[in-house]
Amino acid sequence: MIGGTFVRDRCRLGDNDGFAIKAAGGNVAPGCRDTGAGLAVPKEDFGALHDCAETLKRSFADDTSVTLTASPAIRYETVIATMDAVRSTHDGKDLFPDVALAVAR
Image 1 (cartoon, rainbow, N blue to C red):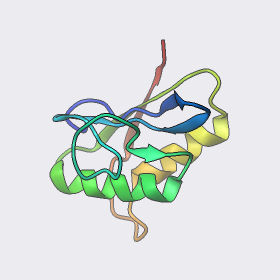
Image 2 (image 1 turned 135 degrees about the vertical axis):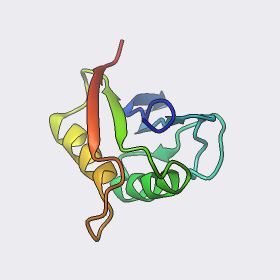
Image 3 (image 1 turned 60 degrees about the vertical axis):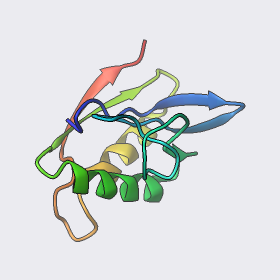
């Protein structure tokens, strides 16, 4: 795990969806450079999510697993795209290839 849990859920701030990410140091802040409140990656920006996963991998080089949590309202295609975004780099190197799914409460 990324020292904790990597979370994808429907996060509502008005009508905005995004990616809330938790790591060993706590919640990952917007922009994925520090810890803090807010959505690490706003909207369904899978490119930014991928970049964030690469940033986190530099801090957690030995970790290979991630837990993905999605509320029932999240589309299947979104879950798959999220998994794809965090599994590997664009040149095929592993980021977090061991994806576990969890149900949001």
